Structures are given as structure tokens and as C-alpha cells.
Length: 215
Image (tube, rainbow, N blue to C red; front, side, top):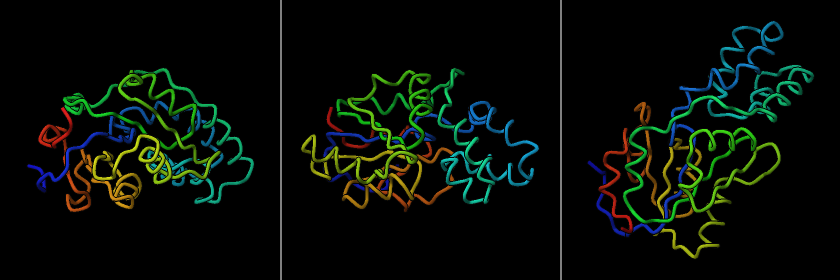
């Protein structure tokens, strides 16, 4: 069941990508195999284990600083990540289709290195699911998700109450949506978080059709 009663019909949906439309863990080991191969023998195995966990949510140049990697290792690892493409099989969550049972405008906002994020979108086959896609790249831009969300509100003349933000991370897109007065849907397929962290909560999208979105 949804947590709260609906007070406003949604005209637009803003989606995150990683762990919101597909499971990061399903491809991350294969996706970053070149990076992991480079790090082996150059970085402490325990640190590599930590990097493999952190890379699911954090850009490599930030991780490199976190573990004080040598500059030459950071630079080469970053070069690998910035030029990373991916052609492996990727599939959206099966229940992602349930988010399409409405006529609301759809936007995708996914932070990450541009080339890799574009590869994910291509391999998932979701480009045409969205009116517009934004990729704030943490290496080349200081844009935050809050900035991009505000741009969408202004450009398309939406009131915050008319937009629903869908994502898996309470500290990024969910927090940004809240900051701008938009309602949020926390998609938590691994059930890691409290439902109280967002206006709506689902461990699958099966309750998504209960939200009052423009038909």
C-alpha cells in the first residue's frame, strides 16, 4: 500500500537510472573489469574490495581521493573510466513497465561519466521512454540534481506539486526532490531503507499504478 493519500495529479515524472531502472549489481563487475584489472597489483586488495563496493554509487575520481591512491594510479584509472563504453546485455527491472501506465511527461536525470551513462541508456533500450535526458557529469560539471530538477520545473512550467521524483537514493535525487518541494518515490528493491524517507515507497513498482498520475 502507498503511504499517503494523493493530493495532486502528477504531470511529469523524473527518474534516476542506476538501481531505479535496472540493477547495478547485475552488470557492475563486467562493466568495470578493465579498471579492476588495472588496479590489481597496484592497490591493496582490501582497498580494491572497497572500491568495488563504492563504484556502484560514487565516481572513481572521488573514490581515488577517498583511498589516497597515488596520482598516476588515479589518473590512469580515471582515464579508463572516462573512456568506458559498455556493450553487454542490460535489462530494466521487469516491473519498470508498470511506471508507463500513464501519459505523464518523463525525464531521466542520471549523474555519472557521460560516455558510460549514455552506453547504459543505449544497452537498456530506454532512450525513447523520455522526453529529455540529462547527464550531470561530476568530472566536468558542478551541476547537481537539484540544479537539473529546477531547470526542468522552469523550462516546462511545472509546479513542484505536479512532478514526482523516482529514485533509489535518499541522499541524492530524493533529497533534491524534497528540497524543491516535489513529492518523491523511493524505489528500494533490496529493502535497505525506511519507507519514511520518501513520500511514497515501493520495494517493487507494483504499487506505482496507485499513484494519481495524469492518464
